Image (cartoon, rainbow, N blue to C red):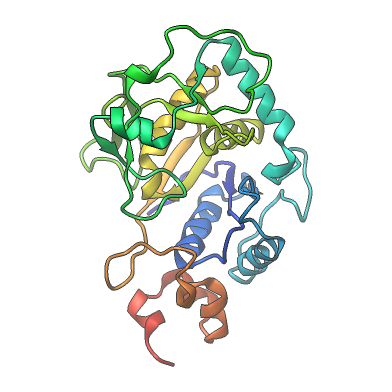
Length: 296
């Protein structure tokens, strides 16, 4: 795949485990496509219960070993810091207030069981859920008839009201339709109203990513194909804020011999384990999976 003229990109590891082979190849492609346009390292550590400082240090060490360099990040500084999402709560709250003022979001205290009982069909797995797990589409019947103005999220989840029937279409050089290069997802069919603010009074994944990609002037997002539907959500969220979305490139997932996608629990295929086994960075980035798994 030929890289476009450099677009400012980002690496966004979640420090809840060691980086694995899929991360390595995705982050390397992000760096390659960014070229000289700048590359941001952002630590997405909003999951405070599982995030560990040791995994931050390990990710930085693994990325350096792979030959990936960045121009901004928690270890080198830069004009768009702080570069840890756990330190950006004030910015996320400001974005929540903009959405609330626009009437784009509403409080949604319903439990997962409420949603499952009322929903008609499942949609793709949410970020952070196990491979193959499906979440129900949030049904319009659970939307509140009236939303009172609020100065603060108030300890309940808030959702973005999606425009039902709206098809979100975006270009993707890898995951797009072979004839058109486009990916399409339809609100109310492929996904429903989604959480932007969590019950524990923290920004949800979608809001934090959109807010930080905008604030850090990210021009292209490179990530795995499991996030295609998430991209459609993020485009709608950016639209609600009056922001232009970056370009997107979704790489095929690296899967094991049984066809399961790699996860941070895939210890034998962590970058650290492959490095300890004597593999060179070039092999980790390019060798067939069976070669990396073969006894040495």
